[in-house]
Image 1 (cartoon, one colour):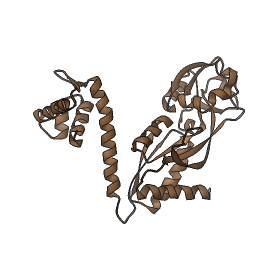
Image 2 (cartoon, helix red, strand yellow):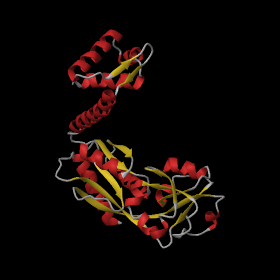
Image 3 (cartoon, rainbow, N blue to C red):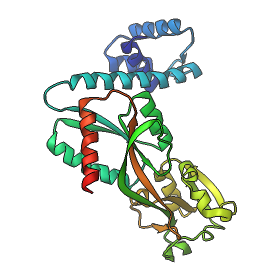
Image 4 (tube, rainbow, N blue to C red):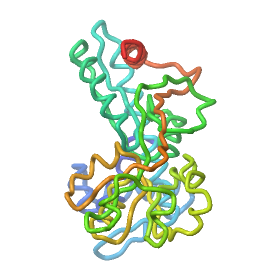
Length: 293
């Protein structure tokens, strides 16, 4: 499979129309159709269901779309890395992270680093820890920021001076918004939204016997959509304070747990893996920043 053909395939998959894709790619429609048919013949599967006015992916096509995007991302990242072998420090550093106060800390480090090395740029990826680790494994991320008890035995890492408090965001009109803290029994009788990572981070254990008495209405991976449910007065979302600060609605109030439940933050990268001079320099910069703090 050629890089160029995979780009053609992804464009058609995105546009769902061969004519429109051909215009974007600046090639003729017959030439594009021929390239796609050759790709199908090479793989021995049908990638598209072709209609009169639209083209949709088959199940095999959806699998290839995911793999093709991974190949394109890794190829482009590799090309950028080889272009950075100049005297001036340059290139792109890719960092994955969830929502939280850790990114505010990293933002300060990135700002200082950028002042010293203005030719360096950053590529940020937001998702939960499992997806960040998956991209670290594939090599499409250089670094990952992780909250709490994440298994990082396969990685090298730095502990960051950022501690997150767990709590809940509740609607302003909810009686819980008048409380200073959320206790273990307070959420019984309320609809509750919890991240899947939150369960593994010890939140369920913190609630003890009261966790089974709560109505878990929804699970989520990043807080934004769950916060919309809170803003709509459906229920309360369990989250870290750093993520809650991103919710600027006056209809949402964050209340920390009592007794307190906290989580530390870690910056990690794949062990025993060659890295660019730019990434290595940034890691060294982070280490020095942590020492100063």
